[in-house]
Length: 334
Image (tube, rainbow, N blue to C red):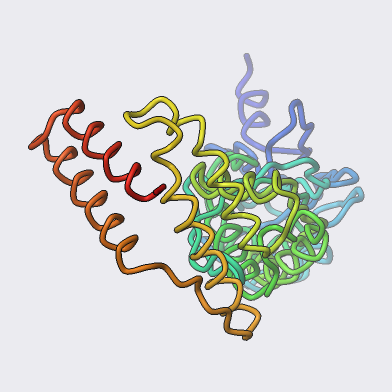
């Protein structure tokens, strides 16, 4: 290899980025010890932008097109380098290429449940999932705030930083939505819009525009979901008396397996009905008097509760509890 050939290999005549895979947002041209040939060619393809950086300072930005690198096409770099109009020597500069393609179908989700204030259930923990899409639009801001001097910056790298932003915006939007969880399924489009509006200025700060944001599902913890399923099974929304009756009915098969059988659930049914009437009356702001019970009946209920406490603590046997319970119930039915 001749000396002239060796020297020529130290200069870059053509700068371009041929994306050979998806998922890369920023790529630094591998300059190593090379210099850019004055009058060389810069090719920026559609859905790309290029950025020249001089000693850590952002200089010229190029959109799609074919450029001849001269002092005319590099005005900011020329100013930073104090070049005159006759400058024609090779020069050093960091060159970064950016993908401005729309990044579609990016998934988001809450790794851990997020606590929000629900208009019906109070403080609850929810998890949510969905998709969104975005693109890089402000290359200097993206380079300065996000990608920096890395050789390669990927979609996965960015989304690690975006995840917390999405969860924060989701929490604020859900907490201020004034929509009960049971109605969220019908209002997911509204929630998506609210979260998207909250995220748009945050994304813009990093040189990214949010193209779309969608909430696909919202879920409750298992215990609260079971309570909601029970209400749906009854087919009511807010009728506490029917809900209490449903819960009592659900307890009968379980009670039948315990000492005393179905008879032992009688007091529970009566108590449940009374509680339901009281709660329903309070919600409707129309007080409903609880049904009066004889003093003797109250004594029997107290004795049953005491017996149950003794059984739970292991102070009486199952047989003793069943016999005593049967005697009390027999007196109640006289």
